[in-house]
Image (cartoon, rainbow, N blue to C red; front, top):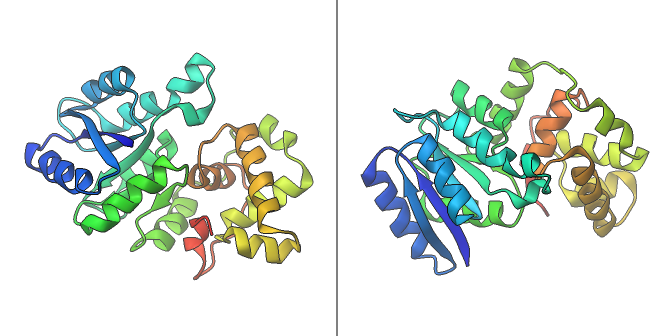
Length: 236
């Protein structure tokens, strides 16, 4: 059962999300919060798999809450995947808050007016370690992220720990290639791509594919996203 915490200042929104998620059968809403500080405390207490976070909340910054929730494992010395994944729920597809949330460590975002099935799918993907960006704005948001956030190395030491093969795979992932496309490009098996990518993620201290892409952009390990293929954040 996937455990979820809902953080939104609007009761109606939380109630609607609860109904949608719990109807899925494999998702349980284990808590609700109406502001950032409450969301952080709740996440620490109930240890959910995913936190659905509205970043625009009065009485508490959702970006700060996202950062605290995501970095909990780092502070305690635990691996990144031990912290809940944060799914940012927003009303604006290219809001500056979205970019701040990605930098804070969110595993993805989805628009508030998304279809119920897409919300359920997003929660499942994050619970299984796959970051995502709402498919309607995926290409634009990654391209805009690159434009607004010029490369500024934040993990040089980690980058030096990557093998040549791991570096190639991270770079191709940041270009938007799927595992299968990376395998074809490097003439290796898809399972080998998964293994190398998993080791690379551990070395650079990220929990999912989306944060791997964010790390690559921060450290200049990317080329400009193509007009197609950024949906390669898909695991297959």
